Image 1: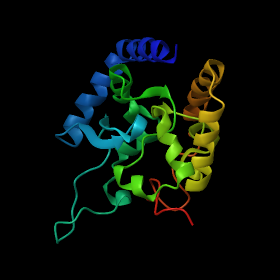
Image 2: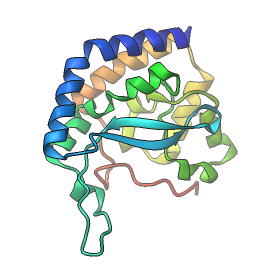
Image 3: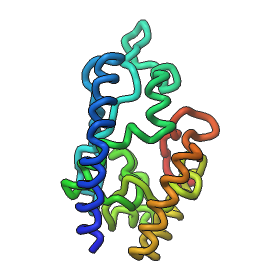
Length: 196
C-alpha cells in the first residue's frame, strides 16, 4: 500500500506542480547557468546507492586555489529562497516515482556516512529514504545528528499509513512556518562525524 501511495502521490505532485518546476528550472538556468539539477549519490534501502536529484541552489564560486568556498558563501539569494520554501526538493518526486525513495521515510544522507553509523543507526537503511520524515517535522536541521537518528528509528518501529499522512500534513505546515531550515551554526547541516 505504501508503494501505491508513493506512485499516486508523486505522479500527482509532478503533474500539478509541473508549471512551478519548469519556472524554477528556467530561473536557475538564467541565474546560475548549467547544471540546473543537482545530482548526488545517496544510499537508499539496503544501502543501495541511487542518484538523488534536486534543484541546484549554490554557485560554483572557488577561492584563488580553485577550491569551492564554504556553503554560506555559495548559497545564492534565490537558492536560499528555494531551500526556505523547500521548492528545491520538487525534482525528488521523480526519485519517488522511480522507486528509489518514498514520500515519507528517513532522509537520504551522504554515502560517506555509511561506515560511521552504529548498528542502531544503520537500521535507518532498512526502509526507503523519504522526501520528508518524522525528524523533518520534529526539528529538521535544528536537531543534533543523534536526535535525528533516534527519530528516524522511531518512525521505522512505529510506521503506519495514518502516521505517513500525519507527517505529510505536518510537513506542509512546517514548510509554511519555515521551521528548522538551518542548523544553529551553519546554513546547512554540519557533516556527520560519527557517534560520540
